[in-house]
Image (cartoon, rainbow, N blue to C red):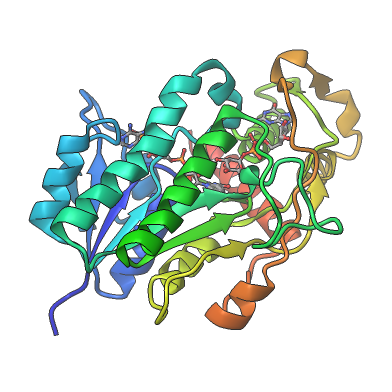
Length: 326
Ligand code: NAP
Ligand code: GDD
């Protein structure tokens, strides 16, 4: 049987490499979209030791013709749209760019599929940020309404609905994975989990004296990225396309994450090192995210494997090792 082909956007980010590794192990041929760089950074793929197993193709989520051309020539079985300006904080300062990449980008891909490869299955990286202030008895599931709190969240609501719309209008196989926060040792350094584990490693090794953070009271449902890419794949293997919430069902505050990270290196007086810095607070905050992933459990047979405590430990160990190797 011919190998299945997958086209992944966002291949150099966090989820792209985990998904590529997962699909390569399933014998897929994996194409990864990269932008034009004078010096591209393959470090996340290097970390997972798959840099040389992916076929790289050049294009940009802001350049419709490049995407049309790639889908027309590759005609992949599956497209995973993971590319985004994914940092909520920056979306307040770069709202237009965030909207172009996150909202129009998926529209371009959907048009490419509609015109040139209508049997291609499409996965959209939707997000719990779309819920924002909304919850249903303290959690969020597929029936919870959206109330995004940032230009990032708003851009992702458009992408969510255009993905649903192309399914309903043209019969394309499109699925939204509404993923709650997921982290790993290759998480971008700006995101709070990695910022904390990197900061704790530096403090432990005497390379830094403080960790500057914003709102410690915000709560998130944090899981492991390696677990979540399996859910993306499963969504595209179903008989019928649909949308799924993916998370752990547990919510923890930033403060809990901080305490646990320091504790894991034997530091118990964490308050001595943490400085609250208003520059890391946001104009509008999402106070509490907690998934109810019952539908994914029931229909996809998916559940997370790595616990919150294991995740914190894994990330701190990886950052300590990075600095020790230097
Ligand atoms: P990430 O590490 O920030 O990676 C995003 C990738 O998108 C990067 O590789 C980036 O490329 C690429 N990209 C940005 N703008 C682009 C453009 N104009 N053209 C082509 N590529 C572009 O994000 P992630 O954590 O892996 O998340 C993957 C997706 O899931 C994102 O869409 C994110 O919004 C969504 N999501 C993430 C989470 C989470 O907790 N991680 C939760 C829910 C949803 P460069 O490397 O070239 O900058
Ligand atoms: N980044 C950051 N830096 N966040 C901080 C800091 C800090 O110094 N101090 C406190 N926080 C708080 C933020 O205000 C937010 O409430 C929480 O920590 C998590 O922030 P991030 O790690 O930046 O992630 P996010 O929840 O805003 O967004 C991530 O998850 C979304 C899914 O819910 C991103 O990966 C998004 O792309 C994703 O869609």
